[in-house]
Image (cartoon, rainbow, N blue to C red):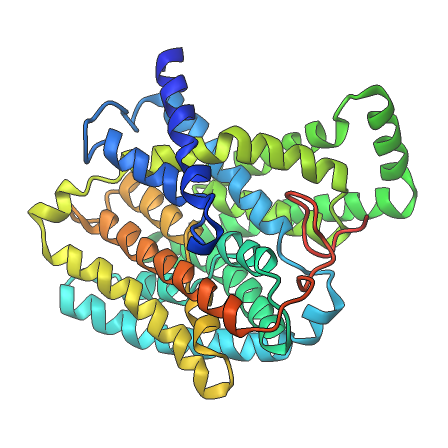
Length: 394
């Protein structure tokens, strides 16, 4: 990878803020870099080679950081959200049942044999997409609290379930890998809680701020890369490593200074690079050559929306149901792992990304409807700083 290529990738990442600048459109930042990657990657001009080792490795770092930040955004410490866990868990379970039925039907209809994978995809929700939309639109009320709990539970469960269902013959190995990452993340949580209770973290933060050392960011990156090393060694996605560490940090409370630093390094460089790489990797030409997978992608996207909108029967407003269906991390990990293992037919991986894009488009439309119909006020979490995890202390 050359500096000219890196300059191009960084410039293409600017398309995210350009498209998201108009608030009334409610477009997520990830959409611009992905579309730019599609244009300059395998589908379009083929200027960007997603298989280039340095580009792919930087993208892996970006994916781990994206999921780390997503994990820190899960409001595990917010009492209001915890009070809604019962309703959120019930809805997430009901969506899972519907998704299982739809996944079985789609796998049979398209002859892929990936029923469990499709079910996990359609049941998943992306905290990285949904929670920022909730905060930016200041959506409040009991339905929003239940939605937040539902998204947090679905995201966590599906992140853990993905490595178990994507390749059933290796599910045992994947379970051991997920367990190893989970145990390591729990150990880091215990260390973080000990440092918080004994004042070590406060002293470290004060010293780092005084000397401008960014020690907490450095230590967090060390922890993230250790978990990523465990994940890759155990043949599970770095997605799980990033998300597990993010949950550990969120459970203790993410310091605002570190949140701002992490936000800068992730949103300023690594996340846009990852989404440009992802767009460059997707080859929509395969969809043209295998048009049945266009139908599969649309079916996965609208199936996910339908499964979540069905929660209208238990009181979830339709716009919030559509918003809950938004997904990105789980489909991306599925495509990454599935293509590495040679599990997908030509075009099937692109179909999964197409399905994710359908849900993101639906979320953008639903966000506008929810913002105009729901009462406005402060967001459900106490956090307002860039990149801070909801519920983190000041």
